[in-house]
Length: 196
Image 1: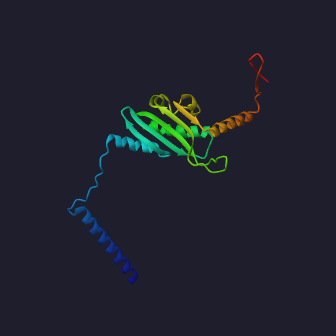
Image 2: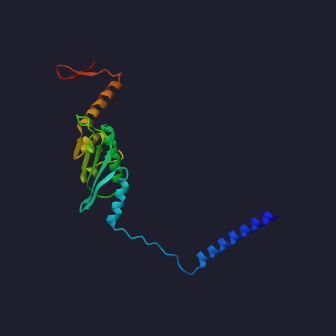
Image 3: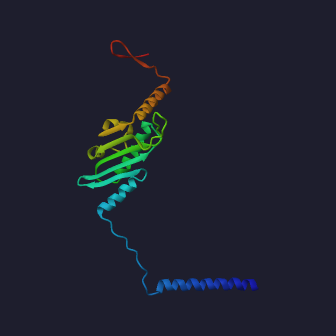
């Protein structure tokens, strides 16, 4: 019996304490302090959207100009595959397009710390890939249907490090060797192609 009386006494104390706390919070007369967040300017709201769009990369520059935003990003990479780098650029540009903000100019650059010089010393922060687009080019591209392999054809400025170019050539050779059922085409002396 003694045990139950302690349990009931503890429950009663908790109930009385909770009721007192609730009564003080609801009917205390003093209004709780309100937290007021500073209101953002339209430019600050747009900048916040850009930061969200660039959350997977490093936002190097975001500057509002009369014609729109200048947005430059960088990404660290260990890959030298042009396909991988082009797809990373496409992901960023697609996120940027989703903001709906006016873009005056934008660029995506990939840098690496995995290269070594001819003496075996590690090189740091080496640019290996860059795509730069004017606002007009950026707006013209349908980012949901765009093939990132077309960046070299449509970009206003496009750069691949020589090692990225070599990796791309190796990928093409591996793809051609992988399609072993097709007969290779050869060029005849007359200039036409013939199947073998």
